[in-house]
Length: 360
Image (cartoon, rainbow, N blue to C red; front, side, top):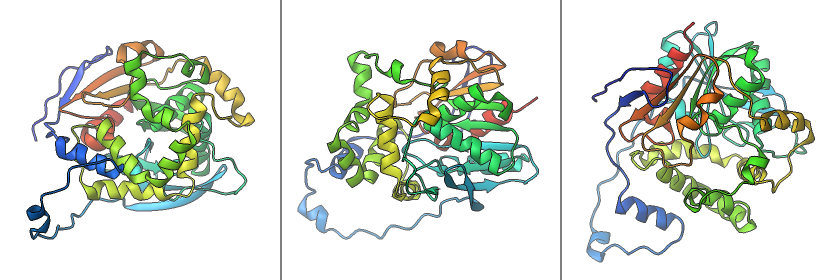
């Protein structure tokens, strides 16, 4: 696979990596998505339907060396671990609707470089569980960030390199902005993603609003019921729309989709999107943090932001957030049809960004 790297600087869109990814979604992919959502699709011809098909050969997928569990704050957090326990710590945070396997090929690269790699399931995913049935299944941004702070405390990690994508990127942004002493450096896909309910009340142009269709769907009880009934079909569609050129197979999707069987996944996901629009209350214990975040604080730790050239999910342009990073900074555009789930689609490029961000 051919790769080329251009020059690097602290201005947007200056580093490019070509991964030569092949194209994926066409008529067949969209038809599959339609079937998954109960939409009408043309039936296969009878002769084709009756033709004998060879049995699929199971494909062996990479996995994590170690999966562990630890109580931290209101949660029992499940996490993958790799690398030497006495190495410098790196925390890798996944997004929605993905899971820790966004980093299954990133973690070994960092571990081989001597890093102690921690990849936790966020609340509502995988083996992470609430310790009390009475704890609100809250998905607001400050709650997720304090979960990671509690995890670092439980693991006795005073500071770490933090890296993330989607919800994970927003979480590492918050950590770096509010607790910079706990963050040695940061890698953030799609840049600066800290939000506020007030900002989210501002209407966007129609084309931009269209990209957030699922957010509005989730504000309805029909949407909640639909996501609960068709969680995997919904997630697969989001993967396809957000990464239109990523040729993931069923085995790759199923490996991550198992994390959505978490009993709190739907509640946390729906609350997250409803809270963003001011349609669900947060918890009072996070009010002070949310007020601080609503001021959109700058981030002064060493940072590399990244973007895929085929990201089909809503995301800001790099020039919009450049001023939010006041320390050592670089932006990298990863080319070759790389979509929203950048760590899994371009693991070598993501791992290199983590290594470079952490350099003294």
